[in-house]
Length: 214
Image (cartoon, rainbow, N blue to C red; front, side, top):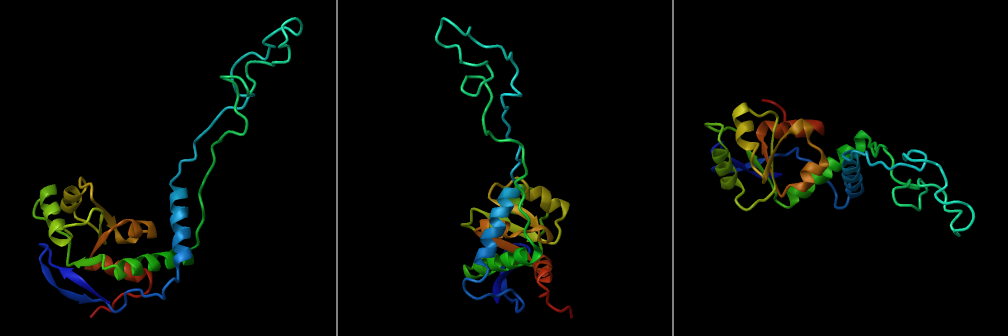
């Protein structure tokens, strides 16, 4: 598969052929991708919502009214669930929402996400990420020259220098990510993905498809 290759200054260089890029049949891996995205969102939940039962609410257990004379003798105490300030029946309690996904499913989901983005021509390559100074303006101009109309850019490399990290951290429409830390949700959420050549090698190595070193 061929991708546009840009120089470090953002000027277009040529097309780069990546023969070992993942390819899949139409529809294969869709269920795996859906499962991984749902699990990723679930694992991000804190799960700390909590309510008090009537046993945990502070207050007296004394009857609110006397038994005879008022017609409300069976009202119970102030901690009853039907009263304002009382306990909550079947309310949320702290819990874990984590979902376990095995490696084969994650692997299949990542392949599906990459194939979809490649088919949509949303993947580009750059020789190396570098800026002369750690300034946001320089890094923004670099991204504009590569993807001028993109609103969610995923910048990927095997590692970033301190200058690139400082220059890119304040951009609202771009996010820096190490190739070894990516998941399928990161790939799906971006409308433009720009790999460095070393970052692409790391991704391909996950699938055992890295290009042989000469």
